[in-house]
Length: 217
Image (cartoon, rainbow, N blue to C red):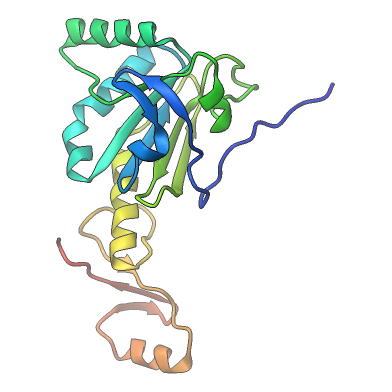
């Protein structure tokens, strides 16, 4: 039996463009995300328990994402009418409003474009994918979760801050890095740079592994 491997964009690729209806109106993705960080995330279906906790989590952290100049865009393989009914249902039952756009992907075109359909899990429901997209429209980080395990919102927020911090200060970040901790500076490329590093105020684990404090802002 012949199997087809789902196509999916990779880290470093430009985010594939598309036009879709969303809960906030028609969207051309490349125009909506232009010059902004964006997190595009999929969920299996409306009116499902795990998805409701996840979407509510994004909504409750809306202020955090606003403060970090990051747009949120949700998606599932449901109609716009199902999306609106679900948004209304959650608001009535919990008081939480999903203000970010949710893509109506009833024809599965966006899910297929982004490799959100994993046939081994389901051929009709998107897995829990998360795409971090930078202001240049480039995909910088991808997370995939199965249908039965919810995402970790603290890790999503940590990863966003890490990406933004690494870009701003031209550094790398070590295992379990959180804001306020030291960053790793790029390794020396010449003997002269190696000697200068040994005379610096960096925390020297070895000549190729050195850490430095980052400004608080």
